[in-house]
Image 1 (cartoon, rainbow over the protein chains, first blue to last red):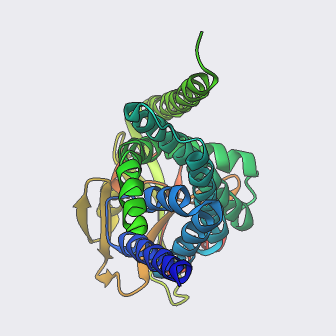
Image 2: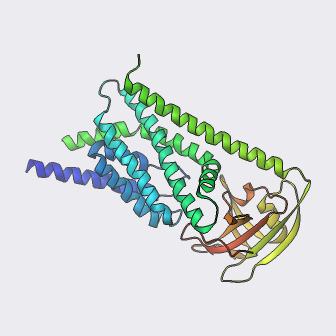
Length: 182
Length: 153
């Protein structure tokens, strides 16, 4: 019975986290400022890589149809892949999380947030470049480099916002774990 | 001296810094070169096509004369009545010659290159027109992204 209660609690908490992630993703917001990466990473830290992948990919799947910016089209699998990597990273990080100096943990997740955002941006730029190649005769590498260069300021904004937002994953993960323990 | 873990995160941080510094430098280098090329003549000539959708024929304004430094929005306003809204990332076109954005139909601008039509990557008031360049305003369905390019001229 105790085990069932524990599982029910975990499922409920995961569902709430998914709903919050989805709601925030679909709300109108400044371009390239998003909370999905942080929530996906936190889900990975608390529930493990598999659940992190599920949350990230699911939010991006629904987002591709209901996003206020329109249907994301062929970029959907790239966005799902990028977000899944963030979920995996959350799961892996939880296994090596720093127990001692909590300031170090905040610094680590900030750096991880910046790094994972760059990986996500590169993957989604590759998605856009692939679409560009389908409609024009421009070589994939040219479109890809052009997208990375012309979107530089958006990347900087995305990385800066996620560097800050990822630091909230430490207290968020702690709070969720406390709630699950009760 | 340093723990492996510290070195790992320092390396990740340096990778982030290196990437951002490189793409930002690349972006400003691109802007500099583009501005330099486009400011070499006081007067430039551009071609503008406007297509109102529903397979209507394109109205062309060839060899439109503009002053160097004009944006695509400035240039379009010389040949059509344009209504737009200004946002921090640039202006969004509301209507051209009273054909207004509705539902998923909107005005998208394209530029002709040696590879075919290339969709504008910035707002039209952020793009400085170049000599002998060809632009195309297309009123089209943008629900599926990216939108279909116009037919070749």
